[in-house]
Image (cartoon, rainbow, N blue to C red; front, side, top):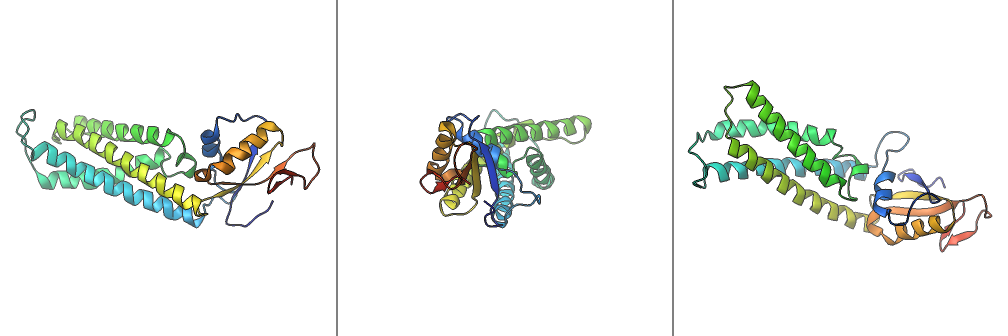
Length: 232
């Protein structure tokens, strides 16, 4: 059960987990190892996510500026274009929002690539970023920012970020099918529920879980609970 040091080995209590909670199980299992570090592949993935987030935010703010000041839509009042001001504002805002993403766990593997919680965290982080900018403009009356630009920036960045994270998730799934970004798993309990959990994890290749064995007090060591999955 020791396994290769580049893999993390986790334990699932098969006696208490319901079969329908596969993706919740996947998210709960994605923890840091004992040394508090992550495999190199995950480090690169985190850097790629941060780079994609930076580009999505920057392009989102640019799109908001173009929609607000270049479209000439009648619903917008004529405003001060000030491209240098909005470029500087974007340069300041993007790192701040990346910090919010980190605080919301959007670079933590346990919150990524499973279920809807990643998108929920993304929505909350973008909303908080918008609120913080509005608070700053309230505290600094001389800092005049077009309200339409703020709303458009929130909508554009949220849309682009969601598209990017969706794409990144598909990339992770492909990497997992190729044997990367995977975790070694032990099922605690070889009863019916434990076996069902193991079968679901083995069938869901995109979950990134390699079931290496079971632990159970009622079966002899070495017994084949499932094909290729012995009792440890």
